[in-house]
Image (cartoon, rainbow, N blue to C red; front, side, top):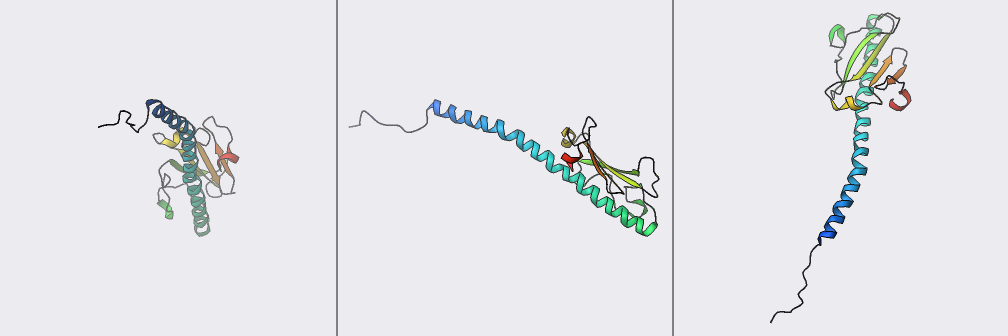
Length: 148
């Protein structure tokens, strides 16, 4: 004979909804923070590459007594026109108002079509032969302290 008061174990719909609500709240809190962390970590792709390229420019200068505006491997430099992870494009130019023979400026700009273009705070990075580092936001504001 079966017991009339069998007890079934399991979750009620209220318990399931409560768990789903908690997961939703946690996702709302963590996803934006994770997205911001990813953007910030990708900035290293630009800053590390610029420092490496500036070092190569100095080595080039010590051999040739001039800097170069080439970032495509010509003239004895092993540089690329984009960062290793591909989030930024790299250019080399003379310093503003200067001559490439005596002063260079390297610039990394977030590439369109890449996720990093959404980084409004740190869109452009520069370093020059004097060691001056700058960063600009999408609105061209100075964000050097935040980005470097």
